[in-house]
Image 1 (tube, rainbow, N blue to C red):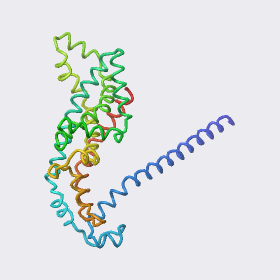
Image 2: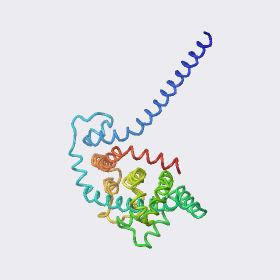
Image 3: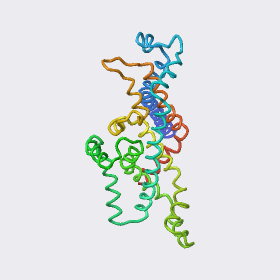
Image 4: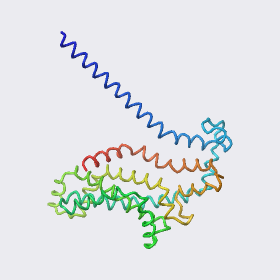
Length: 290
């Protein structure tokens, strides 16, 4: 009887510790969510205020919703033109990153050897290089190659900067695709290009979705690289157009600025929420198997 009581006591103690640890983890996650979402909440809240209400109390609920701030921001930033430029940059970068990284990740994973290992490690090593240490050289090179000042040229630069991380994810994910598919396709007379495009690449949809969303978020929200590469206001992305609303000597149009930022982040936030399941699955499988 005493043994039974000790076992039940130890089990209850273990259950108690598990509940406590789960509660502590929940508190940490809650704090992280509040820290992350609070700036977004403040931006949306103050984008619906007049300039006077915002300056009086930025935390107060607006007495009247000023949706006119959004139409004002839409006109001042030439939103449709800036959106089109951002889409061109993101589309160019995504197509190139997915195309080159999927093929490179597949080939490196399916071709074991010293050269493949060396090239893969080289791509992984390039992920550790800070952008600020190469931005001056990158600016000079882009001028020499005549890709500076255009949205397509900016997209090409994003391809070079984004392939290393994408190859790492593809390389790990390809390991989960059975080699028997390759062998069966080759026996049936399938060439290497057709093998990849018709059999392998459709199986890479989860990691492709992950790569697409992560790079889209990066390119959509990036400010420094477009600022360095784009010189014509007609080529400005959404964030650069929003930056034009900041005036000299602190004379800033905060209502239009916050409304423009909300309009800028809305498309990618919606897309991320719709595809977050594929993003998390792709990162987990690609990183663990890599």
